[in-house]
Length: 322
Picture 1: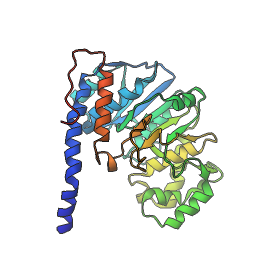
Picture 2: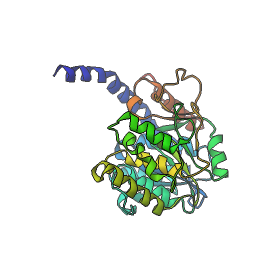
Picture 3: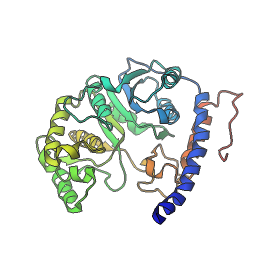
């Protein structure tokens, strides 16, 4: 009882900040629409949810603004309303919306973001595909990403603890020593079962921002890896939330030339904290744990919306401190 009260008190600043952020991000509806290019060699894929429409609109607009030609394909997780769908179509002219039930899983688990990962792999058969989470903001020129696209090479966002690929057997041994009950650590302790058929090294990053090369990996490989890991950790465990995220790491690890985006230019906010947010990052992923720990997300969102609307001289903005 007392612990519950303490937790509620501790959550008050987060809830206040979340409400203030919501007030700011609503202004994304005033930003001009984006023309996407359905037949471009590059596409962005994102899974979208009713409660995060404004966040995803801003995330996608800040990223797409860095490219002259880019397709956009959004997976409706089943929660979008008619108004949500209309908003996406109005703000992204040429967008493709895919019902989550239409995605083929080929034996992989259902739910979480398995449909998203399956769709990314499917579309990468003829496109370079970037997976972009709704809680990201792109703030600078994405030169690193453009280099990967031009050379058809994979990437993912990560952090300073694992800045480069590491030996897969060493990773399995390390993960085993953790005795972790988290599904990521549990899965990583069985990476040896994929050596050498599928991987010899492993990239420990985040599925929130990834690049999958054209014709780089097949759904059959994904299905086989899923089957092996399900056998290793157990069917029930393999259907827990998070397995699709570590599978994204594994799939990217099948490439010899996979690279983790340079940190802190590309960062998962708070994992770890950089220490000086005034050093302008290129792309920030605001994972839920620290998303509203302070006003950083709100401040950046305000700036991004202002920049997107700066050509509209009659635009009025609410104060970032409101």
